[in-house]
Each structure stands twice: as C-alpha cells, then as structure tokens.
Length: 388
Length: 134
Image (cartoon, rainbow over all chains, first blue to last red; front, side):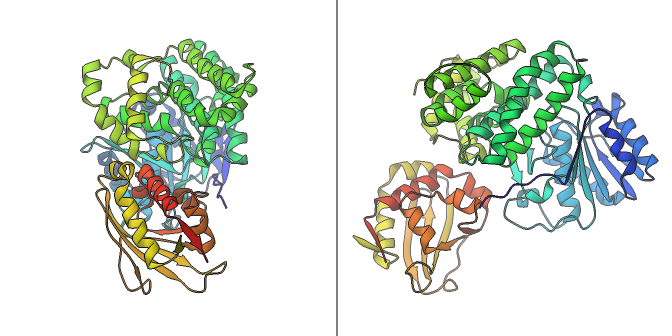
C-alpha cells in the first residue's frame, strides 16, 4: 500500500492568480519575504483578497533558509490575527514557513519536531492553506515536507506530514518571470534534482514516475530558454509547471543522496539550496548507477540521449546534467562554490553526519555508509567521476 | 536452526548484533529501546513480544516478554508474522514497511529515518540467525 497525496486544487496558467478573487474567508495572513513585497507581488495578492472581501495581514519576515526563530515570529502573528486563510507567497522558504505556521497555529500544543509522518495532527479546524510559488522551484507549494534551519545545531530539520500539504496551489507563470537568471538556474536545477531523485528512488511508483519524467523533459528543454530570456513566457509556464510536478513526484516518492549532501552543505556553508543539491547530482547518479542504471537509462531514453546498455545511458545522463549545469552557469564541482579545501576537509565529518541523518539517505537507490558519503563529498569537491 | 519467534532466537539475535561492526558504527549515537511485537497470522497461534535494548551501537539486552503491557520502551515496532518473515528473509526493509503500513511504529519515525544504515544492519543481522518459521 502506498499513499499518494496531492493538494485538492492546483490552478495553472497565465492569470491563475485571479483565482483569489473567488476564495471564501474572513481573514487572510500572507507569509512572504521583503523581496516579494518590494516587487509588488504581495500587493497584487492583497488587492485580490480584499476584492474577495477578506481582511488581510502580511508577514514579510521570511529569510532564505528560514530558521526556527522566523517560524516562531510568524506563528505569533498568526495567533494574534486569527486567520482562516494562510497564504505562502514566494519561494520555498516562504511556503515552508507557511506550512509550519499552519500546523503550529492549528495546534498550539505542537512543537516543530512533532511534525512527523504517520502521526495524526488533526489540522484544518481553523484555516486552509494556499501556496503561491514565485520560483520554479522548490515544489514546496505541493509537498508535505518542510525544511527549517536549526541555527544552533547548524542542521536542516526535515519535517513532514501529509496534513500540511496545501489545500490550493496557484501556479501563475507571471510570478517567476521576474526571477533573474541566477535564481532561475538555481531553482530550476532544484526541480530537476527532485525529479531525477524521485524517479530513481526505492519508493518510486507509477504516479511519481509519470510526473517526474514529464518534469525532467520539460526542465531540460525550457530551463536554458528561461535562463537566457526571462521574458520567454512559454518557457516560464512550462518550467513553473515542471517544478510543481517534480515536487509532486518527490513528495510521493522520496529525495535521495544529492539532497542529503546538499542539505548538509547548505547548512554548514550557507550555500543556496538549489545550487547545493544540483552540484552533487551528477556524482550521485554515477554512484547510484551501480544498482539503478536501468532507471537512469529510462530517463536518458526519454531525453533522447542515445546509448546502448543501461550503464552507458546512465553515464550519458550524468553528462547531460553536467552540460545543463554548465549551460546555466552553475558550478560543476564543490570547489567552484568558493569553499576552500581546508574548510571543507575540516567539516567533512560534520557533512557526513548530516548526510547520514537526512531523509534523502532512506530511499536512495544504493545504500550509503559513512565512508561512502565521505568519498562522495571528496569526489564532488574535486570534480572526479565516481568510480566506486 | 532457531525457531522464530522464541527466546532462543532473540538471544541469538543479540549475540549477532554485538558482533556486527557495521551496525556498531552506524548506531554509535543511537539511544532507544524497542518492543518488537509479532501478531498472529500464517501459522502463528498468538502474539509474541520481544524487548530489545539498543544503546550506542550495542544491544545491551534482548528477551521475550509475556505481553505488550509487561514492559515499556521508547519504540514499538509491530506487524503480522507474515511480514516479520519477509523482514527476516531480507525481502522487506523496516522503513519501507512502516511507510507502506506493513508495520506499525510508535515512537519517532523521523529519528528512525536518521538511522537508516543502522536499521539496515539490524535486518542484515537478523538474516544471519539461522531461522526456521512455524
């Protein structure tokens, strides 16, 4: 038995934001960040909600890689305001904070650590949750996972509950069209990593496979276009949809070692999430191909990469990922992220600890022990093809 | 051959865990005890319960208890005999088993998921006990 969880409604296409004109409620709390506010996107949402007759408050204190502290601040605002609609507006950080706030607002007795799978939280007695992504993207609009940084422990807390999946996700491609090229690349590659890891995961299934494969093809086609020309609205729309499909895929399958390693790197060296997971993707494909070559071969076939045996196709996929990284100006090895070898080696044990504890290790197609992770981290730093 | 479930089986399991260096390394920070509950189906006539105390890479103690109420533990891992057989044969991993509801877990799943390698080594250890089933 496997459970597949989606939001109740996903609204897509240009003009999708106008869906807000028809929503029912009394008070809406928008959770976002100062960048979204400065771009005027929050004002658009406020206007639509007021047209629908709601009183609106905006919390714009979300920071990148949000911390417990930010969640606590936002929860306080929610408890004082008493919304019946909570809206996560922005990138993954804003939507993850919105999901965490939704849970803790509904259940003041809960702590963040208690947002875990298979435990009934009994939510949706006070509010509904709407997510509106402005990046393409983390997939946080549709997933049941939340990543919050524990600053004291230098750890990414990976929380999860099916009940925190949004009721509605609104994918309006005009919103990510203001992303600069670097952010377009970072978030697009995060989506690609989600999709490839979901496909290769031990927990893959028919639903996650279909979504992942479509997303992978779309990202390879449209990410370079959107990177070169942010106003290419066809590319923006396809990429936006692909990011959500990749989110649905991994949410109903699982992430893998690239995310485990990326979370560790991001927590210890403050590297943006998309960049930190994508840099490891080719290396983890090479590592996992020892047991999952056929899965990667199917992806390679879908992309028309050619090749004969599964192992060769898996290699071609790893190279195709490297080429895509290069095409959108992303680093091909960890050394290119500006981290010194001395600093990296000093934190290697801590990187391995965090990767071993990550949910990305659980369903990774090939088992990973400490020594495997240590070698992978080293190879990825140096840019060496994985040969073990 | 050792019959599963039985007192002898759990004692052999404890011995094997304590010989497993991979487990010791993977679980070096682990603190938490378990009740393993085997519910009857497929030839098993009644419920069997094991208590297993795992601490920093070692199994400090393991024995059969008369009932699930006889001993408290941080974690309860429960499933029907048919699924336990699959687990011990290496046909099913415990975390996938919980996610697909073939096993029930009481206790923090997120903590367990941080020790995947340790969980995998425990299953490998179980497969090393020469086991016969009812």
